[in-house]
Length: 118
Image (cartoon, rainbow, N blue to C red; front, side):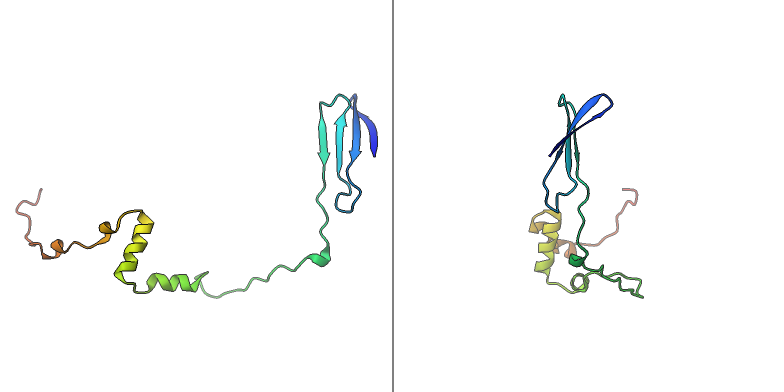
């Protein structure tokens, strides 16, 4: 269905798009010289029967908001050295050798520096 109207000295040709219930009210308008195109598409109505109620917020009296209790437990759980190294390697993108403790530091002589200012 085409309809012509004038506004501000320009002739607008109006095209109605589709006659189904979803596209009702959509409209495309073009000037006679084709310099301006205007499209109008209102927000479609959503049937109330297909909607669901919003979930009710549960109030907690705790100051901590814990999303995943398993994740928190895994952080504080004792881990084997092998798994700790693998996690550190993946977090810092380094090799495993960076995370091995150096035993030579444990047995090194612990003497105070003879000159404090160095």
